[in-house]
Image (cartoon, rainbow, N blue to C red; front, side):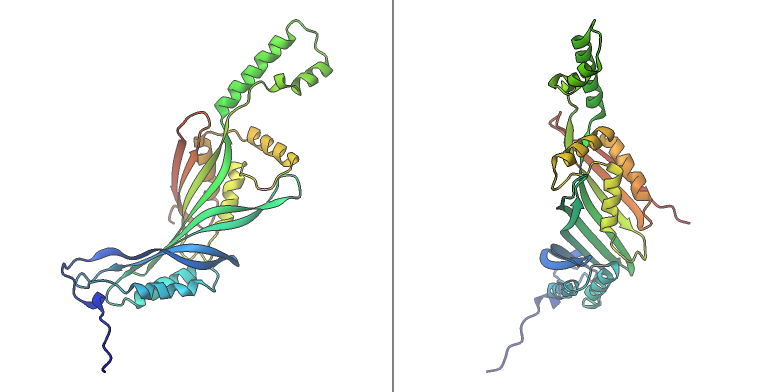
Length: 298
């Protein structure tokens, strides 16, 4: 019995001649290495289908090319090699290749005061494109922090002042009495509202950038905000966190401006789009601010 040749339907002519911008697969499970850390990731891989007469692409070739990511540290050069393999395996069909990788970067973060430390998860996406031999890399990072409302803080201070007037009107003040009052429930009759907030960073890297500066960008963002959410804490850390919130009162507009200035200082960055979301504890809706920046060309 003669062996039959397996049909290649993708090689057949399309019934409707029309090029396509992106054809591929989404949600491919694979392990990756970032700074030596093995992470579980999902990848979206695709190419353009420039030949409108072609029925389709060879998706298995894209899938197999992703094996390059399993054993090498993820860097721009490796991403470009994978994209080039996408194109080499689709010669005559495609001129553009795309790869998006979604994962959670784990960073061990120290407590503010005590010797404790714990792991924090940062959702990140890495998008690489090779279009007509022009290579681009963009990073998307979510950074979570605490934000305390300046308006709410001012209103709380006013209520505390009024309570102090009510309690000590026509009274000769003694140091011990004031100290005791400040340590009582009356001394903090009102508190400003704080909320867990998120900064979404979308960063385009400079051409020729040799590394993926994920940790660097996270560090810049958290330092600028001053109130990154914590992991393992003792009471001393919780007190230090309360102090940091009180010294870093911010509206969403303040947070966006801080991040803009901080990211501009990174030499790895060509452009960025920042979106901050304050999940209000006062309102049922969120407060949002966005800012963009592009490095001036020489």
